[in-house]
Image 1 (tube, rainbow, N blue to C red):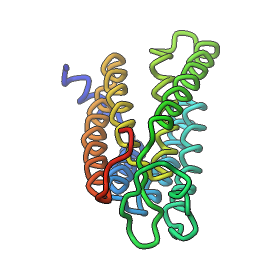
Image 2: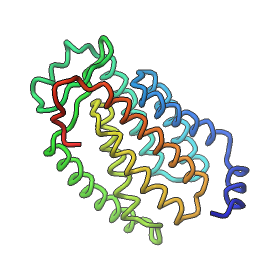
Image 3: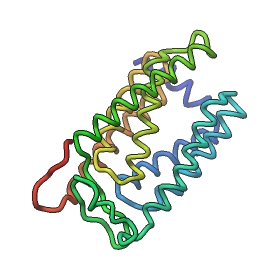
Image 4: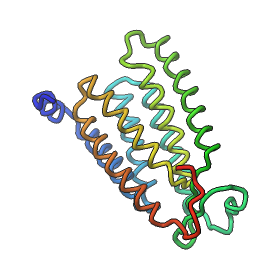
Length: 221
């Protein structure tokens, strides 16, 4: 990788972009540590990204996506702060229940059927997004891979909110795909950020996996 484009991109990156990136990184790190405050940083980062996408880059669809993440941050904070007694979902799910802090919903592993649902729905949504982009943005770079990674990112965010262990594995795959996308498009700064996200996601999976209750792993990870 040529470092000159990377240096140029670093120098040209606006301050609000750096603040948004910092909030996003703190959000991922805190989420990997199972800390409720992650959603505060997710909300702030989403607001900053939405402003930049609209005011600086004129990317309306990306700004709307960030507003979706802002709403999801509120949902995530609400769900993670709920009492376990108010969420008896573990009884209705054939999943692994993982130890959690007092007052937090349990972390659950995913069944094979749930994985199939996630993958199939994400692929269909990604295909639809890609075709939408091709219709309204002629010449878009890698529309199908971009659409599929966006779809998986949305679904994986729901998995994180639902406190599913394997959400981290999906984020590893998503971030790896973005590494390829950013390499092909020359966005080297964001490529390096995705590499950091991969490391954090792997740590998040390892940390959450270490909380599994003894008694056998029934998940389909």
